[in-house]
Length: 408
Ligand code: PLP
Image (cartoon, protein in one colour):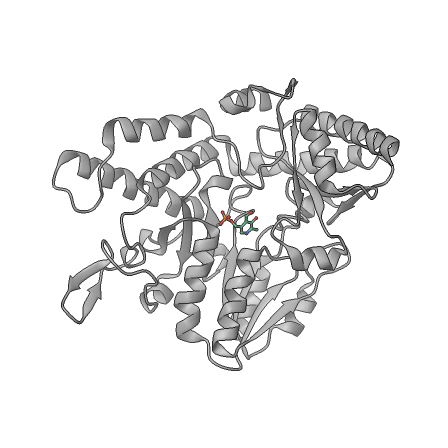
């Protein structure tokens, strides 16, 4: 499947440092297929105008494109209505909107907010800030030794005092696929709402918000073949209707008086200012592309990539792999360390061989502490990667190992 799919991604057809590019950093941002690039080009060449206020033809075309993209997102995550789909800048903005909007209105002193040790900073800091402001208690769900979450632990941490549970669908470091549907049941059973950070889930597997029964879902377009600068905040209509906007200005108002104003209906009351029109158009094209390939096909391919990568990488002496060893419990990424070599040095040698991986704390410093690692390297796969890419990675790691054995 990958030769055809790979040919849709023009950026992959190049050499880096004299070697064919092996792109293994899709968890940071995915590459963009020609279909998305052309949709952006077409929008800017033929349809660009501001939305929702023009009576002219271009304004109507841009509005149709923008609202058409919202319907594509609705269908993609099976939201009940487009009123539940808000365009944002990405996962970070979406979670901040929940914390500043829903959180500020609903959290009081002594309430509990529950997250896990594996969260990305984007799903930690907004809650830390909210807890500080309101005198609420931020609690962490501990992890099992293999980097998974036990529902028994969730049941112990979530209590009737808990008002918000916020958990990532898939870990950007461990690759773990979390049981967010079951966690949502526990949250609801205690009267809390369930927030899902879908940044690493939505691009890689079929997500149905009605089946998950989450109250909010946040994700980013750029990790799912779309452009940067566009993301989604899904929220249940009943909750969003009672939630105050967090950004005020043009586009989101109904009536403006000298001292009082009223807001537009959902979803526009949460989209102050000129929206990210081209970004939404690009995201719509990305969703068409993902649907064409099929989320089930993508998920199956990634499980296979994870298995192959873990098997091949385990043949290297001194290489530690983090996260569950069962490929069905994880998505297509493998985080590792090689001997005592700093992951930045490993990544630099790999780059000299044309291989792009990520190194650092991956915006998950509490998890690094839990792993007792200051930093790690991460190879992450998407539908355009193949076993040959993993073979190149393993070869590159052997070169790095030899190089550092000689140096130290
Ligand atoms: N949550 C997770 C799990 C992520 O992996 C990321 C990005 O890597 C984010 C949140 C933040 O996404 P963004 O930077 O697109 O807002």
